[in-house]
Length: 303
Length: 303
Image (cartoon, one colour):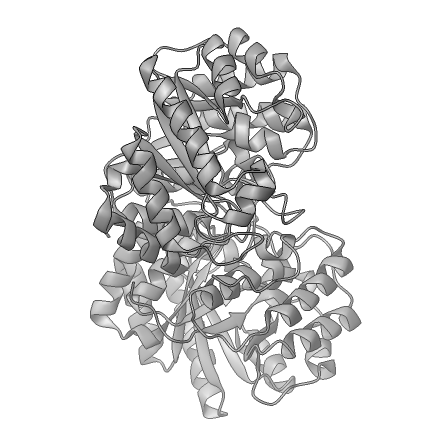
């Protein structure tokens, strides 16, 4: 089994997790949670989203959260930015980098942001150019890469074309999203084999949801394909709007634990991650989906 | 990715699942559940255990359950048998085959059955010989293969020696058990690479628990090593006595779904499995750990 020596985890819980939770978390609790996440060894935290507050009320306090968090040197604090207006708010909040997003499925794009893919791409390119001009790196999400809740199958050629456009416009990394958690390891291998003929592995991160329990298997497959950056959510926070009751993002705890057990470095302290998870579980008063969290404080089991 | 065309699932929920649940299920409910499982396409159901009722009160009704289930032709109805007395009860109940068990860890063996490994092996050999004489096939479980709750690391040489002894005594298949769910994919690859130098892949099944969320990843790795038989539990029923709150056996639902999504045949109908899971969830009034079950009735998502 060929695996990388180290992996970077990009924590998306405060954004992708919270936007899918029923309860809205108070600003001071978000701040305390993000400060706790900053102490775990994570080097990248997606703090919030600057989409219009009416679309995602749970993240309407993005500017306030950015203003109040204690930034730890060496940690990138980033946000989702949908358009020009969002970029202005994000820059005013002094985000460390800008995350743009696009869907690989026409119907999902229409339903999600009320734009066609090509309209969305136009906006994304403008946001990217402006971000780069002011010295902010840009990361891109491509969603529904492995399946769309409306269309089912998504054409790999559409994904490839979007990757080309995004990289050409200056996006430094593309996070390939399994928005509804339907990807399976064989499909992940097939998609990555195709894309890595055209682009370097370092151009990609993987963003898996654990809806059907396959997220860690998909990560394992991605590692073997050479991917070394993964998005995940503290405790497995978040749900799936298309499958009520289902899990959300793969849990940072579970990813980090599997990586560490296989000798792959992440720089993340599992005990501190457990404490940060407990804080948000207590705040939301929910049972987090993370298996590692549910199993209790991590113990070192020698083998 | 080299994967088998088909896989056999051995359903252990009625035994390994129920023995780890807090509530005791009434005989008529067990019977109704096992009858429902028989209709899913499963070809192997471990119905109960003939250990002394004082050790596992939840399965004290083994004989009664065997007597009352409706046996479907083509399905094997089996039970765990610890010793001579258990074998007599199992044969009286007309089990289709006999499942014996051993631990690869000395301390776990002592704490679990109050016998050293060599004492346990002696008993197992006697039970195996007697079973074969009366025409019953014998399957063996070796537990704590990937880690012991007391000793931590388990020597692979001890596992190898037990496999040799069991196969020589006439056991047709050994289920390698990750009793506490600590195995990781790299370790699974390493253990199987070692064992498959000495024994054929057809001599093994894998028995994973999902304590830390790695069960499906471990199954994926085992598939690539050539293993085609897996133990799992309907809905993910069962817990872990060493990690309260943690998941138990990997869920049949999740295993079957992943296999089907990768084009691997199991003969199991996911909708019928969903219904059987719902029955036992309602009976026990618990939330089953299976991600696929939680996501709701399986839909076919074309890709």
